Structures are given as structure tokens and as C-alpha cells.
Amino acid sequence: MTLSFVVIGIDHRHAYGMTENLQKAGARCCGFWTVGSPGTLAGWEKRFADIPRLPTLDAALETDAQIAVISAVPADRAALAIRAMEAGKDVMVDKPGCTDFAQLAALRETVALTGRIWSIDFSERFEVPSVTLATELVQAGAIGRVVQTVGLGPHRLNRATRPDWFFRRARYGGILTDIGSHQIDQFLHFTGAETARVVMAHVANHANPDDPELQDFGELSLRTPDASGYVRVDWYTPDALPNWGDGRLTILGTEGYIELRKYVDVGHPGTDHLILVNGTRCERIDASGAGLPYFARFLTDVAERSETAMPQRRTFTVMDLALTAQAMAEGRA
Image (cartoon, rainbow, N blue to C red):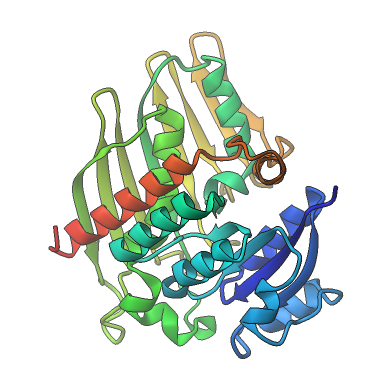
């Protein structure tokens, strides 16, 4: 049986990757719906000219698709996901999956009532082959027990192409809720922790005074009884860098470490550079061919009602920690 999906909201370019990767995994897109004409629409129509646009949200929810893929404005994602789950669809949503605690509570309740899957495509893990290889190495014991992660998530502002909602705190959710959630996900994934404690969180606007609601810098620290994590995110990527950001992850184990230079490594061509150092190996590995298993696993979970792509509890925990860090940084916790 070929599973099908409908796309609800394409306000963020992540809609492209989610659609392409689900198609590569064997799913069929039966249509898309979005509000108005977002700046992403031209790129969408160029990539997916054969996918019909549906006239209304109701029309999208009434399709026979088993899955709803959501990349709407962040503040709108939870309500759309709830509508989709109530219509009998499993959900794959762009990060952040929600922007406040009330939304998260409503999502928990809807999942419990409907039995539907609510999954967040944390693209800095699920769409990065070097993370796939790092996972395999860590699980094989290549660096011993993981005791710390350091996640760096610099991004390019691209001011001229950003929509109004990008600069509105209530609409994008804050920098730690948004791009910080990627790094929290990776901390829990690589340490194997069920949850963590936020011990420090900070946000600032250092370089964009004309946009007072934009947070262009954020950092946080996490701790469990056995591990700790540090996260730094920002909107400062310089124009000379050939891509949107020099995202990196360092995974420290008791018997070695792994560093991922995910998207670029200045002086070395290509992406997905993995550096492994342990008792017997000290090498740079091209991890670009390691694959992206999340999407096929998600389809398996939809078909078999399993949790191979991402445990449902973990998805909720990541967003709970991101929202907690955001509230702490803004003095609300």
C-alpha cells in the first residue's frame, strides 16, 4: 500500500525537504493548501509543479491522505496539527511544532484522544546524513558513554526574503523554541536521556535594533544526572559563507569524541564531514552517503502504528524543554 500525504502550509522552506524526502521514501503527495501567496510559493511550484493546490483547509483535510505535513507559520502549526489529527491523519510538522505551553498541552490531549502520531521533522538531525553515521557510531560504542554535547546552530538572516511573521515574537515563538529545539533533540538523542533540566537560558538582540521582537542570539544549558549539553544559536552567518550556516555538533564520550561539520567545513569541499577520535582511530570521514532513515521509518510507523522514527514521548519532551528554556530566558520561569 502506498501512503499519501497532503501538505498544509508552506510558509517555511522546510516544506520542500519534507515533501521531497517523503516522496523518496515512497509516499505520494495528493495536494497542498496554504494561506495566500507566501514567498515560498514560487519555489514550491517550480519543484512540485505536478502537485495540485487545494482551495481550502477543509478540502485538504477531506482528502484520503493518511498524513498531513505542516510547515505553516510556527504559531499556527499546533492548531492545524490538531485539526488534522481530529480528521484521522497522522502529522509530520516542521519545527517548532508549537510555540507555547497551552498549545503543547492541547497537542498531548489530542494525541491521547485520537491515537494519531504527532512527529516533528527536526531537520538538523533527520535531514543530515552525518548525524545518521554519528548515531551508528555512538550506538556501536565508538566513543564510550556520551557525557556531553555542544550544538552550534548559526543561521543567515536573509532579511530581504523574510516575511513579517519572522520578526514577530508571538508568531515565530522565540529563538530557543524555534532553532534551539534542534539542539535539544540532539542532546536527548545522543545521551539517551528521557528528559533533562534546563540550568541556564539566555536570549538577546545584539545586531537588529530596528526589529525589537527578533531574538538574534540564544544559548542554553541542559543537565541530566549523567550528561550535560550546551547550545548556541544565532542569526549572524556572514555573507561570505557559501551556505546558510556552519552548523556543528560535538559529541563527547568517555572514550573519544565525534565532531560533525554538517553543512560546510571551510577549506574542505562538500558537506557532512565527520571527525572521529578514539583510542584507535583519528580520522575525517565523508558521511554524505549515510542516508536519512527518519522518513521511511515514519511511513512504517504510520502503517504499523509503531515508534521507530521518534518516540512520541520524546517529541513532547523536546518541545517542553525548548519552551521551558525560552520562558527562563525571557524571565517568565
